[in-house]
Image (spheres, rainbow, N blue to C red):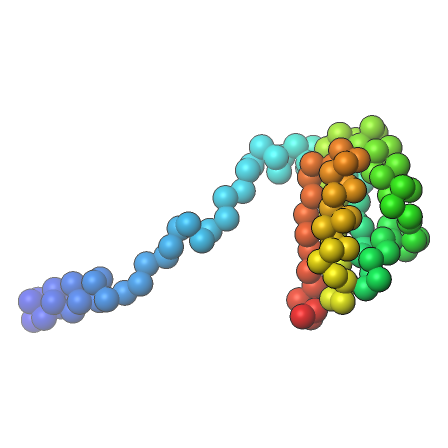
Length: 119
């Protein structure tokens, strides 16, 4: 009886799939605690329309105004994080252009967000 259980144990150990640990994202705990310690208002949400226009807090912003707004936000809070939310119909060129403007303004914490329902 024990030999059958041992054979089954070895069989299932050999044939089972193991978790690929390289697929698990590594989170930098220091960066996470810094952003939590900074308090509220450390995230700026930038929406990109289908025509490439950028909106912050529901208001349309020209590219120069967006750069000025991000620079002033970074002057107040160096840990400012910018989240980009492109429309499902926004072009890749509009997204990359907005990212270039934000990095020109000095933003280093850029995140890209996509809603689940969008294709």
